[in-house]
Amino acid sequence: MDFSDYVPSVSVDCVVFGFHQNQLKVLMLKLKHLNLWALPGGFIENNQSATIAADKVLKDRTGLEGIYQQQFHVFTDPERSQTSHIEQLISNDVLDKDVLGWFKNRFISIGYYALVEYSKVNKPEPDFLSEKCQWVSLDELPELMLDHEEIIKRAYVRLNQDLYQKPVGINLLPEKFTMPELQALYETILQKKIDRRNFRRKILSLNIIIDTKEKRMGSNNRAPIVYKFDKTKYHQVLKEGYHINLF
Image (cartoon, rainbow, N blue to C red):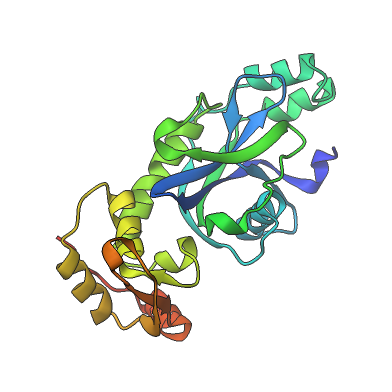
């Protein structure tokens, strides 16, 4: 690997959120020969922006383009850069020993969180340092390398904040969904119960979802209305922002 093509001492780390069976998931990498997991990440090419570098990481791991992503923090703690894991990868012949000098530099990491519909990531792809890439429940995180647990926690806090200001559901739900499914997403992220009638009224007042005139048969012979996002109004609201008070 020719590190002269990359900006020294700077990396990107991506917290990829998905929503499945009323659980918030995070896409993780299992390192080769180590009982450690890591976030998808990478370096920034000399002619790239950090955002383009993050886009490439997301495409390489998920196979998808145009994933919604948001920069949320820059991690600069001088103690965050440790080489013990890299040395273990070298001893297991995963990396060549001549790369140790690159990793011994102090690194800052630009954190991005990304939102993707779970079912679209059919086969997550590991990188050259990992043996597998898979979804992990946010509340069941394995042992992580470096400060990746802190990165995930900060991303989750930012997602909570953005939920009141941005219609993130369009990125985490299937194209068509019911109001109970949308409410379950909000309750899962916020870890709070929301009054059903109040939630419906507040969401409809934003004018960003459309009644498809379809119904989905549910339990107790209930048939909730099926909605989809109005993408034109979604992008307008995403640009202008809003504040929704759910409690």
